[in-house]
Length: 220
Figure 1 (cartoon, rainbow, N blue to C red):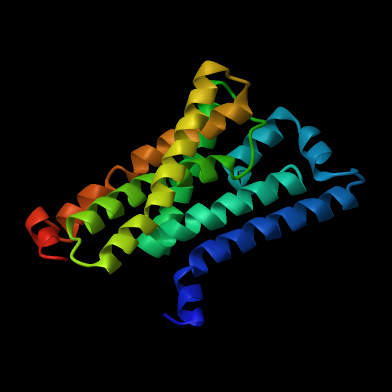
Figure 2: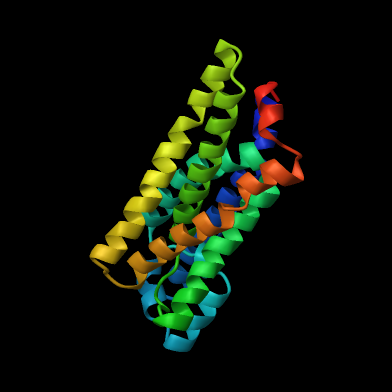
């Protein structure tokens, strides 16, 4: 595959990353025009109704500082890029909507976490999704192994499988053992929603695409 072909397979996650950067740039400009020293203070000064509206609309894409968005961009590009490469940009965006807005709205309706913004719920969810997708791909490649290439392809999916589910599990465990408020909770909810949303992926491989173990053994 050519360099341009590789970029086309990742255009969904690159567009999403660009959108996050654009939203953050708007935050910085707004904070400057309104006389705030930084965007974090601007967001903290919003009243409850304004924060609630923010959560319901663009909350999953708003960030409180450079380190906040930088961290989320790294995880988005790694795990989101892998997911798009495997299942396409449409499903990637679906996972982002389910984990991002799902976590924000659940938090808002339960404990009233109006201060929880950012793509952290999305990245936590994508870690879980990447783990499940990676697991399925490892199993498929190992069951259909008939060459060294198949083995290498299977090994290539081990990283997202182990690291993705590992991060998701540690996020959920940290919240249940030592909850620290809405920010930590939204990470865990995002991870749980990611696991739930991705649960249908193995069924899609088996049913929608007509996959079967007999076909796998034949090297499909």
